[in-house]
Image: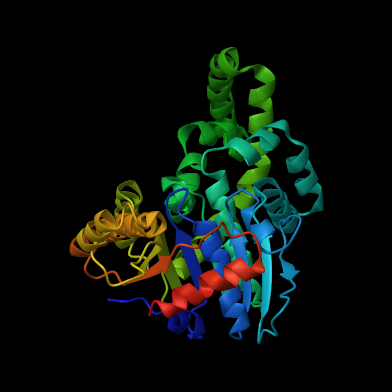
Length: 371
């Protein structure tokens, strides 16, 4: 099956496109090219990168990207739609969320809390959870027809699928309940028991992590507790959005053994999560440029080796290209055999790296011409 990229981008029912894949396969460039092509074809498009690398900004002709969408000026072409771009700032997203949902006084208490300042940048799952939060904000705004998401270049790229569950489990855990327990104890008798239990707990834990850190953690959790239900509810809605028909996951891979093994992992993970996978983009392929077998090219090169050295070099290069193309075909055929239900589109490699709008447009054209 061949993946029809233009049909996917033109479909008004397609609201979110999520690009995922391992590192070094051109995923960020692909996400930017898809967003640009969608904008040129009439969609109001925003591309969100979770990858902290600066490649997306550079390719779009911007010095930098911030935590809020910036419009991209598309030169040399009169697009029917608009293109916006942003890069996730995990800490700023967390701060904005606290300010929006905690109330002015409580928000300032939370933001000033040393424990908050630590977990907002290093707590396990925070980046993935904030990615869910930002995606939910973009979708809820209604400002764009299409949101293109560029995920981190690793297996953790799909961790945001279960970030709400992981964060809920962490914040519902025994230690967290103990930290918030004294504030929740209502009656005197219960408060006395909980306070006594907490004092023993605090004394034991403070010898390990320090009394001040424990006090900061307790104060943070007591202030955070009233907001937690709203956090989980928004995350649940975003998770539902990702599993809806309006979302399309695209796995990006290079025609190499390691990259295709990772692609298989992503395909199986998405299937296990019941997420709507639209297809595989096989990036940087090397199709044969002439109808001449490698054997025939090498045979011809031997015949003219002494009389035509330039022709000999060209023929040997062609033989190498044919061998590479055949190897890539075998690898992709193996992937297709394992995942026959996954449509594939091949994108031929460019002669140089993509670093500007023209290069992104070229990638978009190659994506469409493969159908």
